[in-house]
Amino acid sequence: MAFLPQLRIPATYMRGGTSKGVFFRLQDLPVAAQTPGADRDALLMRVIGSPDPYGKHTDGMGGATSSTSKCVIIAAPSVPDHDVDYLYGQVSIDAAFVDWSGNCGNLSTAVGPFAISNGFIDPARVPRDGICTVRIWQANIGKTILAHVPMAGGEVQETGDFELDGVTFPAAEIQLEFLDPSDDGEGDGGSMFPTGNLVDILDVPGVGRFEVTMITAGIPTLFLNAADLGYTGTELQPAINEDKAALARFEAIRAHGAVRMGLIDSVEQAATRQHTPKVAFVAPAQDYVSSSGRRIAAGDIDLHARALSMGKLHHAMMGTAAVAIGTAAAIPGTLVNRAAGGGTREAVTFGHPSGTLRVGAQAACVDGQWTVTKAIMSRSARVLMEGAVRVPV
Image (spheres, helix red, strand yellow):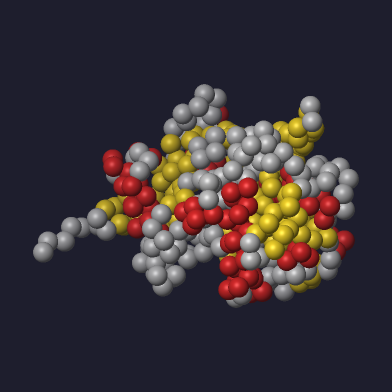
């Protein structure tokens, strides 16, 4: 039997926020993978090393977590007044599929630097020193993201003193603006609240009845009160991820919430839509110790938030879920707003397992419907490795 050599595909391995992923230029992919479909999915799964029954990704570029099983495809803009198209694929770890249903807010941070360094931006628009604003079309959800990327000496500045909880070393700060981040097309409510309500009761057979806030800002997210689940809101990963019964309850809540939000037609379909919706729980501010051992005082935060991604508690916070948190916190009456103490606000600082994060959102009620014009947060990004990834044919 003859064995073919591996494919050699130009690629860049990048950290963006608290995530890592393999970045490709669309034109560098094999022709069959340049369009959506089974060939593209099969290629990206093999790049990451999925599906892996061992849950290790030893034979691929993935890290066997939701934060590190990611691929990004960057292309010339398909929409006027944008610089690039950004398409994100969340690769399942143990199943043979790629979820294209949402964005990755953390990896959004790396898109601007990648676009500049790979020639997608007109050199006349790129300052030698200062800030280069990259206008990104997020193709998964059809939204615009502005990335404000620092430049130094004609190159993207990657090193700096900006510290991001959940990332070990400091780097250069990149500010992101998520414009019009809500998805009014999800669900039946005609707004970023799929049911039309700020708070609903979700009945999950065999699990319980819960107050929930369901929102489609940033990424479809279902919020619960930590106390209703028997938690304090200060939990770290082991408290959730080492409890199989708890993970099963969260998945049941997520599946029923997805149906209620109009994202799927039946709970059985949730197994093939792992990326969305996210499930998060919130609690009022209180002292706690982060996963790094740092003590954080209640006075330093407005509330606690914990979120699950791909069936496990995230080690920090997904960028898109942070947008959902900031948006919901700005709207009086949501569970997130209540946990933050109520009232109106344009920014919120929340505690997560790795530390704290501040996110701003501009929300307004127009003709009885809540809208959000933008959400803002700062992250960082850098190239970890560049060259080519090898993939068996």
